Image (cartoon, rainbow, N blue to C red; front, side):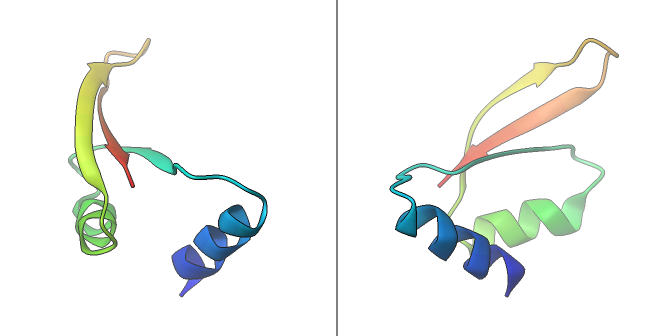
Length: 57
């Protein structure tokens, strides 16, 4: 419900793209993003050596 409210707010403000960054260990966030229409658009390793997953809706 929070994600839906956030997306509605962003649409009202004129945004057309939402991007998230998460990690494989946060499976529930990956699943939520996928259920809400996000697609994986890439991965990278941050300055601390942690592997990140980029998703875009």
